[in-house]
Length: 325
Ligand code: ASP
Image (cartoon, rainbow, N blue to C red):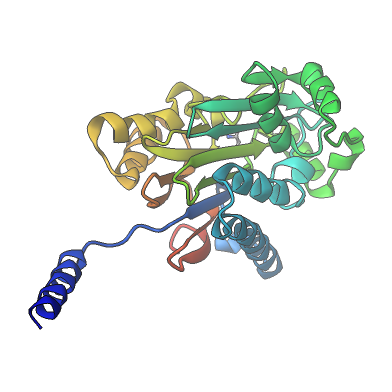
């Protein structure tokens, strides 16, 4: 009888102690499909529906990997491949055109468990640059490969090589003609994914066609580790989208991780500080998705909208596009 009471008391005490301490999710994931001037009035109901549907499908692919105990790296690569194969996003199939009428793709991936990273810049014939970035990380001694050499490596690794016509889409071609007429290089799209897996490992990946009408083999922030992509199990995983030159100069992704590591900020505070305070003041438009080592997610942008989604093992599953959602 005495023992029974003692046991009951312990259970009661444990229950009382855990009351109010929220349990961490076992896994968490966030995605983006680009930030920018995304306003409801500029998006037809059909296009909005298509974007929401694709974001939802991509997020679901990642959720399934993580729920089954798969790695955050696998989730990131699989999700980004889905978005690269979709013409709606500025990555892979939907990539924007450079001034000379090419599609030059950049991508990066980072493993937060060991700080290994892989990136490719300016590739023109690789169907899924995110997979090439992962091969650079795992199967080469390097972090970043570019142009023709990167494509040669992709061929050696058995990745799918496509003719440059694969990347042609009417919509992006029109964008280029508009940008040339206005003598502007526009920002558009980009896709990214960050994830925390059941083993506690973080990973980040980003893939883009860069900016419409870009010249001189311009490379943006996406493939630059610490600028558009970063992951460390010590703090968080980050993927950015926006005006790349600002993300490079403000080392956006690493800065968010550093503010967490050295200043003890939460992931939301750190992302707000960099994106809302510093970047916006400097005139740099864009946003980030980030997940920390405890599964907290921050989706922060200083532009009108950002195609985005977030999910975790505790039942969170949401898709949003506009600023007021
Ligand atoms: N950050 C990308 C770049 O500057 C573009 C984007 O995210 O829309 O290349």
